[in-house]
Amino acid sequence: MTTTITTPASNTAGSIDAQPATGDSQAHQAVALIAQHRLLTSAQIRTLVAPHLPPRKIHKVLVPLREDGLITHTTLPHGMQAHFLTPAGHQTVADWPELRGRTATPIHSPAAARLRAGHILTGARAHLAFLTDARARGDEYQPLDWVPEVTHRLPDTAGADRLIADAVFHYTATSPRRLQYRAFVEIDRATMSSERLARKLITYARFHSYTPQPTGRRGTVADQGAMLAWQRVYPRFPRILFILTGASRPSLAHRIADLRSMAADHELVARVATRVPLGAAVLEDIEEQGPQAPVWTPLTGSAEPRGWTEL
Image (cartoon, rainbow, N blue to C red):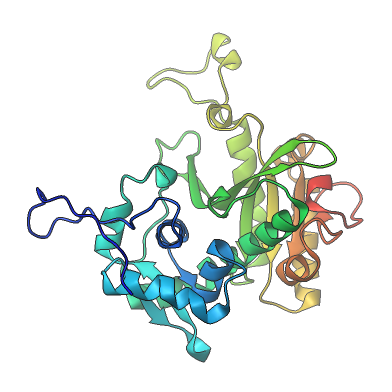
């Protein structure tokens, strides 16, 4: 079995203009999702593309893509395969509308895939928890609604200093009434200090208050009414969600407590916290109970756990 590829006769040698035959095919979806996430396991691709497909059947989608040179893979511990695009695959998806504007750093080699796998695949696990819950609820949240590595410029640095969110997702709840949500997501695998994790709240607070100024011009009274940077991208500032894993329960609880302290003690963060919902949860709790379960600790006010939309 091979993937049908269309290549215009006018293509020169070495030029790639290959796509799965139908836009809504499982092959097309798989390639788009691998491009967006940069790295996905076979099991994750199956859950994203065809959750009711028997586990081994997903290889009937992936093997032709590999044979056609669009994807390759690396083998992780325990024999798990993680797939990423080849250069030909990247060229193939370069003009796909569903991927336009997505700027996550691509994976170029098996070695790079193995080094990045922990963080990338943990983010995909979080995404799958939201997707599985949304499907059960009948909410509007699709596999491409989780966008990894979203970058925004920060003030006074000529673009050298940036906010890079691990992901931004878009979610529409349909019951009991239709509500749209957006969220910045930070994935924490306990690989950095708790203080450094908490400082990320300062970065988000800086972005929340950033009003771009024309080049070579100081802020004036008139400039104070200018549009904030985030308002050029989002109708409402996204809530900020920290998803933690990779350490003992007491250690994760301490890290969440440090996030709450930052939200209370830092003036700029405390100001943002009055306007933007902030919360933290353990990844395993989200996976086992669902993100709407009371597994999220608010970073301000009462620490009573609640669902992510109730922060």
